[in-house]
Amino acid sequence: MHKKSYDQLRSARWFQPDDLRSFGHRSRAMQMGLSREDWEGKPVIAILNTWSELQPCHMHFKDRVEFVKKGVLQAGGMPVEIPVHSLGEQLLKPTAMLYRNMVAMEVEEVLRANPVDGAVLMGGCDKSTPALVMGAVSMGLPFIYLPAGPMLRGNYAGKVLGSGADAWKYWDERRAGHISKEEWEGVEGGIARSYGHCMTMGTASTMTAIAEGLGLCLPGASSIPAPDVNHQRMSADCGRRIVDMVWQDLTPDQIITQSSVANAVTVAMATGCSTNAIIHLIAMARRSGVPLTLDDLDAIGKTTPVIANIRPSGQDYLMEDFFYAGGLPALMKELGDKLDLDAMTVSGQTVGQNIASATNYNSDVIRSLSNPVYREGSLAVLKGNLAPDGAVIKPAAMDAKFMTHRGPAMVANSYTELKSIIDDPQANITADHVLVLRNAGPQGGPGMPEWGMIPMPQKLLNEGHRDMVRLSDARMSGTSYGACILHVAPEAFVGGPLALIETGDMISVDIPNRRLDVELTEQQLAERRENWVPPKPHYERGYGWMFLKHIEQADKGCDFDFLRTEFGASVPEPEI
Ligand code: FES
Ligand code: MG
Image (tube, rainbow, N blue to C red; front, side):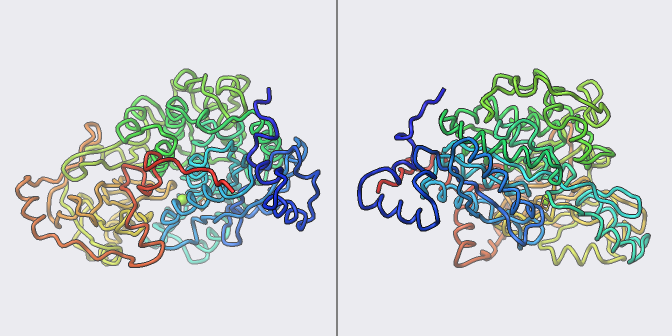
């Protein structure tokens, strides 16, 4: 059922006309060793590869891309590999989040400017997924998302290690003096022992599950461990399938709809999703022209139990176990009619057709709705006089005693100030305090770094405490845990109420009623606002300057205002 003829493909506009421009396109293609047979009558498929030698999660993409190319060739397309920024989460400073929108712009423009008809997007490490999807959605060509796949379980001295989560855990134990330098170094060498993205249900695994939940991956693709040969076969499948998608003209607007966004949110909540996913889901939905708010997310969260028993929300398991248990298709099957099974996907089949034969092989790893890991959605959205536009917390990954809490604030204006509190064994702080870090939001960080899982103060660790209420306008890693209230909007740096509180003010948190307040009157807040001095912006030139001018707050997805779909007339196709 081909809808398009060769003449109607974008790439034909470059290669087909009998004119001087096209002479140039053809002769330069031939300069690369190509012949007419390589492009004539064939869709050109861009394979956007986020490989880099500073991106350990995507190390295998250098070779894995050959499987995608093989699939494209088998199906009668012409593959072209195009490198894009890798967004390596662990090595980029100040934070990969500063560059998510830059990569989204790069992706959109690279697809627009080149003679391509469709794309396979190779990503997986945290921000790479939303960046690639946002850009490709805004361009609107048919595309498939190819997730990197999680790395193998970590291992040290017979113990299984989980990305991120065990780093924090062992670090706290080291600071409390419970493990030696040798053991710490053993953990360092064993926690990431293959290529692939983090294998806890952190931001990477959550975001690839969301991409699959949106219908942008082939069924099951997001759960296959990177080193498993199933991943190679799936990569070739992506290559074969994208060629047909181009002929069928299956564009992203036919896939990302209100229904598929709701499916993706439900999948996210059922996985016990990373708090980062909230920001990226909103950004991706808005790019697709589907309005999505924090309140929508909270509403779906309230009725969706966590059924993936994967750390950090679950207890024992990691992504490798999730794959052996049947992976995301099995989880989606357990969700049943909580999903819109008629939603279309890149496979050309509906969600219902994709998961019809899915099987759950381990009901402890992938739970049923009646035996969940956590009964109510893993995330909650709080509002109040401290966060008029919302804040986010992950009750599934914290000590339940903090569901309601009242305590005095201990305020740090910067990470340096914070360190002086947490490293001081004599600090004047109790387990009832609410430890506040501000100026760590989109503008203040800058780039909203993952500082939100504020380390436990040394004094409290020594007393045996392992959790307390922490509050910030930062994000936290998807592998983090604890009673950390994040994404406070508006952020302190732009004058949100978080900027006005002082050490000693009483903060009250009420998660069942979704409230976050400081016990100050409106008049007290107004008086303090009079004296508030806006801080100096972090950048006065370059990309950072543009970022600060155009970045939106966390509740709006941290996109640039000018990249919003409804910002101005749509961008025209390049003509000559
Ligand atoms: Fe790449 Fe965690 S560092 S996914
Ligand atoms: Mg991360």
